[in-house]
Amino acid sequence: MKVPKLVRDPGPAQSAIPSAIPSAIPSAIPSGIGRRQAISLAITALGGTALAACSSGSARSTSSSHVTLNMWGFADLSKPLVQQYERAHRGVTIQTKISDYDASHQTLLTALASGKGPDIAQIAIDYMGEFVAHASAFTDLRKLGASSLKSEYLAWRWNGGVASDGSIVGIPTDVGGMAIAYRTDLFAKAGLPTDPAAVGALWPTWEDYIDTGKKYVAATGKKFIDSGKAVFRAESNQGDLKYVDSGGKPVYDTNPQIRKSWHDGVAAIDAGLSANVATYTPQWDAVVANGTVATLIVPAWMLTQVEQQAPGTKGKWNIAVLPGKIGNDGGSFLAIPNNAPHAKEAYDFIKWLEAPAQQLALFKENNTFPTTPALYTDPAVTHLTNPFFSNAPVGKIYIASVQGMRPHPVGPEDRIIENQFENGLGRVDQGSQSGTASWSQVMSDVERELQG
Image (tube, rainbow, N blue to C red):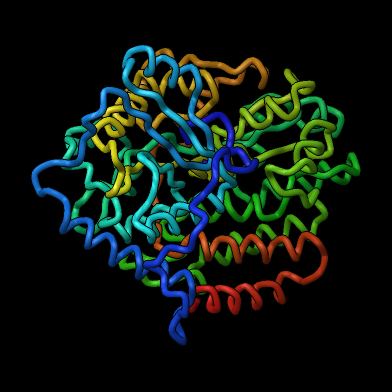
């Protein structure tokens, strides 16, 4: 993560999550039904009840003179923009509860199953398929006028928040266009070019990227990438399909894009390129700061992570094109649960926050790249450079990464499946399994998780 925030915050939630197991979830789960499936059934049942109870004409609004909007998510909102909105809307206060990436979504699932939840829910693109499948648990934003916003956003990002019945579940935040950040000083010591165009020409394909890494490791004895799963995640996001087909049928075990991405992730590990560190850990922060790794696969939002965790490396990085050129990793949606007490006020804030002017401010503030194409021809974006990364033209770089993007279908279990693949590559990175053995375990683990 995801994101309207600065960084995916791995810290604890700022306020207590629902402490009681909701009565809608059976205390004794029927045989053959996993806890996650039980929660899913409870959300469906409560969503239908909520729909029956709601007026068909409009969403709820508050009669109070002052409104506090609660947002739950994995990445905090921009404090300057929140303060700007509160100054312009004196009767509105915005509070956030930030949890770890996966935990935040589990908290939301549990709350929805109990008929509870925040005014605003931040949902990562990896998880959106699961929540869109429970569209009845959310306010259909068409009732609040969201249909008129569709043309302002990248079509594939907008469509990711729309359910099969046409209801609008969420409004897109940023888009996670990808590139390669590399240490120019380390490349120079290895005898590699340092100019971004020349560096990008080294790796038109992922095989070329790995070959370049082999040359770097041979010349320096240092690592080239943070982890093998970083290669897998980036490459697997570049195909027309990922874990499910357009009809929702699982294809994780047969999709050639997944098999090739796995092969390349394992190849990078077997070649000794990986430092075997996970993002959002102190170990990752250290290897980025001390020069242990020479390259990072960087969605736009990750630039801020590098800036914050490795301030002493300012001016030592530059940015080159990604192998395969286009791709996306990350981004989120802002949704309003069906039982939100202040749905109208929540929508007004979301509409304002994700409008082009505020998306531009967010890009300048924390590198979250806009989902509003009108900005892709705005000189404020096309001419934007980042001094931390040797004045790299980040606007042009990330525009090129997302234009022509071929989105893949996202299913309800995508994040569950993704976790098993990442765990599998982690085992290879740790040396506890070969790529072949780990693939076999991933297949078994995915099947088990999907059944539960």
